[in-house]
Length: 550
Image (cartoon, rainbow, N blue to C red; front, side, top):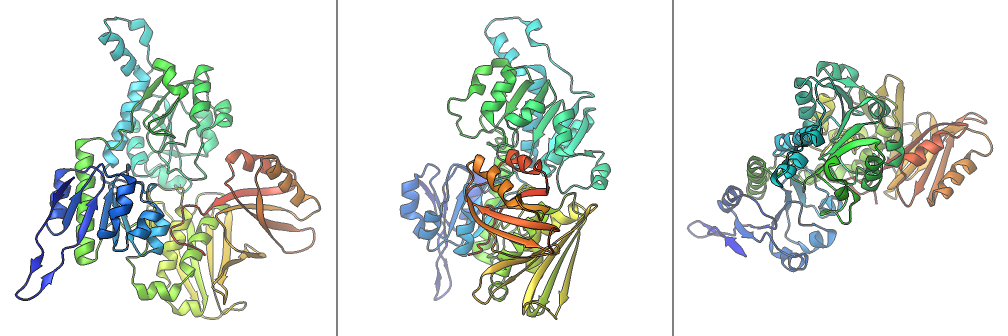
């Protein structure tokens, strides 16, 4: 284990203790140098999980990449921890909820590897179109097999981009320059914004039907896990080629392998896998029809240099000056404001997630209304929390810091209102999300027992305690509707935890919310939508929430 230390800063009669940082994964030398300028650095890039648990209590900061899992046990044992840094975009390997509850700041480097990831996506697409890896291997084995490696042009082909964040946006721009026709699916990109970028915003189903190439740039969550599955692959455009350099698990790899063998899918290029390294993957056996790389999206000299410098500077600045550029959670906010808002921060994030999922089209306007005594408090953090919830799972690496920027970039008008009078409760909160199809409204409050509840969904009064996994249905209030939904879930071996129903009148439309022990896949939601009498079915996951509702 290598160790780089700086001497404690001394004045004439006072010694200032230098804060300690553990770097648990490999980073560039320049990153280590920046940390060592003002901190005591321990560099142990091969530290075991057991050793991490044993020693984490000695450190004020922890810097990791994807190798090291920062579990709740690690955070709880890190009694001196003030900040955890992830050199990269994703924080899947950090228990952000536990860190938030323990008051530990989590920071990442959301832009350091953007160019590298986008360029690797393009490299995979070119390699797949022109059989570059297979032809290279053939040549090196002494063969000359021109006829075996007939490729396809990218010019005039239709590229479907799923997720138009920083990386997806770069890929789309490059594809336009190549003469491709680019379709994009992103729930928070308006048609006007897409047109400004010379792109065409379409529903996901249209990408399945029209795209010659599909590239994925979304976070992995309950909604996107196995997004491309056997059902989707059965109705996808024949001859499509699929690229994934975002997150493993978004594609059902076994189903993809079957579709390639059957000839439905012409080929695939993957840089990320459900298990890394992949175990007994059928994709490995498909030869030249697939291009597989070992998670190289950020593996460039520049990306490694950039993310290391960014994280090192953030950790140094936070420990010495209390400032960080890219915080993922909320402890950087003033403690007195957090205390005054209490559970409303978590409630706002949950309400934003629900409203964003129930809204049928691209969001145009967002409004947060604080009622009663809550209107006299500093409610801007509630706007940020609600926006973060609304974008959760739909935009890569959305945080409390960039949620407002994301809203502006996606053309969402944000308003904040205060009404000192409240008719029903002493204080409360409403969120209104407007689209071309209408407005979805969610209201809630914190009860005297500090329990957060949803009190109204649109015009339907309800008493709902938000849960990790929830199914929302809008249906006609008539006999047998609850049984229909329960039957579908029972057939799928989905256990119902609680049920809440709100209605405005006998035999009129009603809303039902079921909380469950496990997430629902898109296929189950589609089955529910096909039931007569059900107008809308939406699955909402609060799994990625940074704040705790309990």
